[in-house]
Image (cartoon, helix red, strand yellow):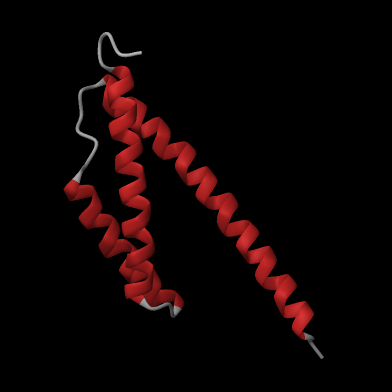
Amino acid sequence: METLEDMRKSIDNIDNAIVAMFSERFKVTNRVGQYKAKNGLPAKDGDRESIQFKRVNELALQYGLDPEFAESYLEKIIASVVRNHEEIAKRTEPGAQ
C-alpha cells in the first residue's frame, strides 16, 4: 500500500522535473530573445502567443488538466519571456553596456 510519504516523494520528483523543464525552456527562449534582438524583431509576438494558448488549451484537455490553469501558467511564462527579450534587446542596442 502506498503511503503518504511515498506520494509526497512522487510529487517532489514531479516538481523537480517541472523545474528542470522550465529551466530548459527558458534557455531556449533566451536564445530566441538574442535572435530577435540581433534581427530587429519585436520582443512580443501576438500571433505566436495566440497559437501557444490554443495549443496549451488543447494539451490541457488531452491530459485532463483544467485549461484555465494551463493558460494561467502560460501567461506567467510569456510575461517573463517578453520581459527578458526586452532586456536582451536593450543590451543589444548599439552603444548599450
